[in-house]
Image (cartoon, rainbow, N blue to C red):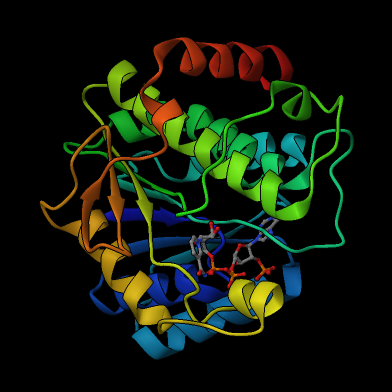
Length: 260
Ligand SMILES: NC(=O)c1ccc[n+]([C@@H]2O[C@H](COP(=O)([O-])OP(=O)(O)OC[C@H]3O[C@@H](n4cnc5c(N)ncnc54)[C@H](OP(=O)(O)O)[C@@H]3O)[C@@H](O)[C@H]2O)c1
């Protein structure tokens, strides 16, 4: 039985992955930002999986203080974490997170803060693994935008946040050789709330994304420090900036200054 934490598991591929792994009998921690939705999904997953070992954590990822508080709570309640799936993400929203674009905060800064807050618990596992949800959309980071000094359109902010997550993923894999850290594009326009809200259509069923998240979380498919592109069905080269050490260091320097 593995101890698995999946963020953004009240909807979309995160929820479906949580249900699938709960059915296999693992200990599952789900996460949501709405108390009522989290409680409803917790009940649903327990009932459908017949697994009582499912717990829930609450935090709005647009609020980094809430993320850090949640990390402390998780660190106490889950002494060992075998798998962390950094899945929560946002593209279209009316929400805000202060000066820095909400997509940077939810999609990149929050998983960064959460992961650092529970690193010791991950390292307590025999074979820890982190799966970071990237995207085919990856765009060169405007550091001024990350700092909140200039604004971006929703799609551009999303693409920059996903490249930031991918760059940090590669960085973390190097910093923490005992942890397998993999970044993945689960497939473009999967049939979830995100694709519906942004594009009003989908190209593939949500299950395509669930299957790759399952394989990267549970099988020997995961390769640390690499990027799996599920549009291609294989490992692939991420955006060129993810291999530029100077840019990666600049990103991490800014991130530590602003968000640690
Ligand atoms: N769908 C695609 O085609 C596609 C393609 C490439 C990458 N991805 C990535 O895959 C991941 C899952 O996406 P999805 O398609 O399953 O989307 P989704 O159905 O919209 O689910 C997103 C999840 O993230 C949560 N979330 C959103 N904003 C949050 C916030 N401020 N605080 C805490 N949780 C928040 C949502 O909570 P609520 O339930 O409260 O809304 C939900 O549980 C995302 O990282 C996305 O960027 C998706």
